[in-house]
Image (cartoon, rainbow, N blue to C red; front, side, top):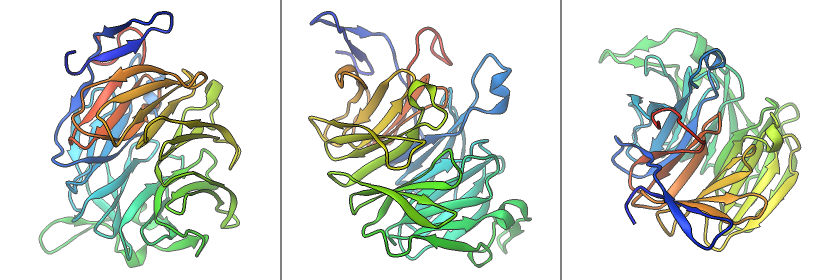
Amino acid sequence: MADFAFTRQDETSVASETTKIVPLTCHGHSRPITHVSFSSLLANSATSSASQYYMISACKDNNPMLRDGLTGDWIGTFIGHKGAVWSARLSDDATLAATGSADFSAKVWDTFTGETLATLQHNHIVRAVAFPPQARPQVLAAGGMEKKLRVFDLSRAVNGPSSVDAAGATTGADDALVPSYEIGAGEHQGAIKSIVWSRDPNVLTTAADDKKIRWWDLRSRSCIASHTVDSLPSSCELNSGLGGSADGTLSVAAGKNVYFFDGARPGQLIKHVKMSREVASVAFNGEARRFVTGSPSDTWVRVWDFDTEGEVETGRGHHGPIWTTCFSPDGRLYATGSEDGTVKLWKFTQGGYGLWR
């Protein structure tokens, strides 16, 4: 079978066919990809025939990259971290980026200029960052090996002027000028691996190495729901909702398990799928009722039917484990990031789309 091919399982026959769908490969990173995520659909997409959105990738080469989400074209590289970058997010309007790194810091970036707007120092590796669901957000959540969930006030960093250091480089706000507060002090008993801001700006979700998924109310700064998973969580993302629900569906990968939670009801489990192999990452398309997984034990991306739990497609092309997966905001493609240092974009719609004609 040729490389970069898709095998589609025919549900009415034992035979299968190979469809001529070639993923787009995004080169540029030099080490394993740790996280990919998309912005929301930009406002002008509503009046344009083509969708417009952006993608950011985190990598162990220290240098997160911004790309056109539809084509994968490189736009810029954010330079400044001194260690592996574990998490990268874009604001809904793609004007801001946030990254969390092994250099004990989170950074906030201006996506138009590439400038660092704020460097938020921590006492250990930062594994997760998240913006609230709004344009030009004024706060950022961050967490990691410290086992602390902190929310930073970015209003001064985002709206205030930048400064120039002695070498002529543009620098953002000093960490001392960015106030923060901790949510749920002492409750996390393991490293925070993922943070997800729900569509309700008052609710945050964390996935930690104490095998707990927790939902937090920012108004009371307390845990309002929790769910224990069977293994250490490896990914946790908010996806499109079942039936087009605007609140979305939270998907969690943990060992040989995939969990789906209602985005509107904290702690409400929709479905728990037991897999035959360990899962490193999962992404869900609620309208199509399909989910995509990557595994630490092989190089294939697999597409599954949410209702039957059967495998319906297998994508081949990566040359290392797939650590991260994510659907585009319109659900018509998904991205995968691998140990091989590449990000691939896979078409998930009928007919032409983007560069696929």
